[in-house]
Length: 381
Image 1 (spheres, one colour):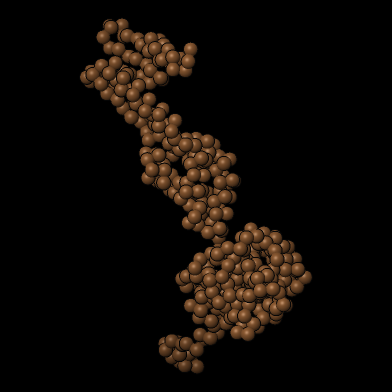
Image 2 (image 1 turned 45 degrees about the vertical axis):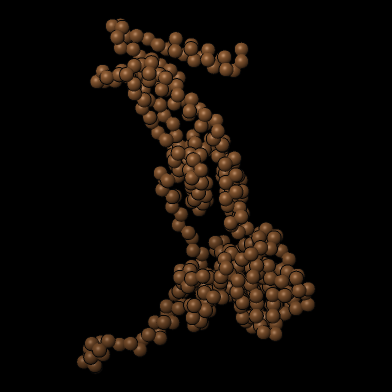
């Protein structure tokens, strides 16, 4: 017996075994594929219900047999759609390759790869067909992710993935539209205070990557930007440092944003560092390490300095922004040096008003006296 014959036989047996009559022989109840066809409460025909990814549906008819035929048709269509629907992991790979890969930077691609490897592939929904995934499946998946940042990233990426499937009529509904995006409060990491900066400078003297860390702090560089610098990017005659690329996982690529491409003045402290590499070949990178190594070693320096482990290499860039702001450099100029497209980013994330600065402005503002205060003082005297 082949598969088709077996299917037909099972269908016949289902009907024969599940059909029954009430004692009065008038009101018929039929069960088929775990669905019950029963009389309507008002006595005008029969109905049944079935459920798919989009919710519950009702079927009505004058006779039980009519409803049964409609139910068979609906279930066959549901099976047909389910058979053609890809698994989530297969659709993710197709969606990423066709619609995302060519439009994002290498740093973003790295995030996609991490999300796929660490969260999508290992999840229960990875092998579910996309048109069968429910809101409850998604909610359970998101709850399984402990990191609020990664949870929010998964939500954003999968929502775009399902939206494209919806546009292509692969799913009737983007289930992610029924959920609120998980909240993630970004941690704004602090720059060094003056005391912390002194402790760091003392500890970093022993580091083999001292020049890298100090250049990042004296020029306000991202770690990938600093590691991508070649000899030809350094103009000693005009004291200009060109930033036009970044290093990610050992590969040189384009900067984070268009505004990241910039020309920086080589400050005195930076000149002392860069002069050591004056004899390098034009295309040779002056720091021959990868970001992961530099970041890991930085944690050791922080520990030796007795500083909070929260500090990452990015705090060097933030420290640069805060120190030159304290020195009186206009915010617009600071934003340009940091490679920001908007001064609002600089003000919100990179400029920290420290307690020592508050005291400084307090002292400078003490010249202001209200008239009433002056009069009261004179009367007291």
